[in-house]
Amino acid sequence: MTKAPNSREGKSSGRGQRDLRVRVKTAKGRKLSSKLWLERQLNDPYVVRAKREGYRGRAAFKILELDDKYRFLVPGARVVDLGCAPGGWCQVAVGRVNALGEKSGKAVGKVLGIDLQEVDPIAGADIHQLDFLSDGADGRVKDWLGGPADVVMSDMAAASSGHKGTDHLRIVALVEAAAAFAFDVLEPGGTFVAKVLAGGAETEMQAMLKRNFDKVANVKPPASRSDSSEKFVVATGFRGRHAVDLDDDQPG
Ligand SMILES: C[S@@+](CC[C@H](N)C(=O)[O-])C[C@H]1O[C@@H](n2cnc3c(N)ncnc32)[C@H](O)[C@@H]1O
Image (cartoon, rainbow, N blue to C red; front, side):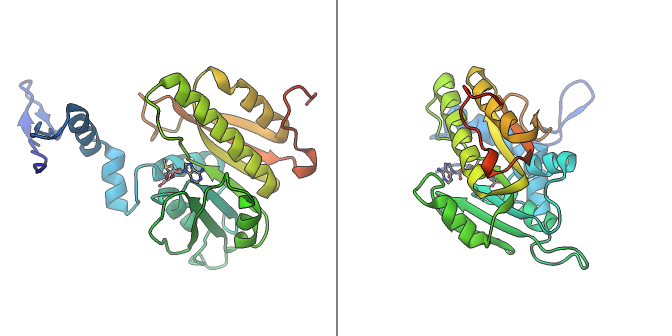
């Protein structure tokens, strides 16, 4: 049986300062990697904040920070969240786009989340279990949304293979597919936000986004762990479906 974490909060560090880190004992049956993961979770201020503020995960702060900077989740916006489980980004979007109509006098937005996994309901969000790569997914999303979207955001990650290079290629392919999906559902002027991993293979993807959006920014929000190669692209000012240019060989 897994033992409860052994909190040693308050133990002196020996330099007159109190060591406030929570440490976890290695219990029988718990691997060192899970002990380190648990220790990192318990000492992560974003995990603590997420719990305190009622978010389903620390990922919520990444979209909050990106939106604080680029302001795409405005009241009245229609948002598609690709790979939304467990739901932190949807929770943020519901509040910011006023999906529950709580901000009087402000336009009421819509939030549609999809994921391969089942997601517990979120008030104000319409959630569906769906693979965005499946045939007709874009049409179904537009039907559920009642029209095109103002924002398509993706925090999707492909399952890790344990090999850095392979994982990088997989996530680039996933982002390219998410961008192609966004081209089908976005309104001209719309915004595409996606998680990418820094590495060599993303140059073409960046060029493709630059041809289809007015501005493309690469950002590492403070909530993204510094030891991860994760970053986010924020592409604003979609030039419209008629102008979509996926091919890197064509003049942009
Ligand atoms: C890191 S989680 C997203 C966390 C989320 N932003 C939040 O705040 O709770 C990535 C999700 O992408 C989903 N995903 C990966 N590939 C997908 C696909 N092809 N279609 C739909 N969801 C996908 C996974 O099931 C996973 O739940």
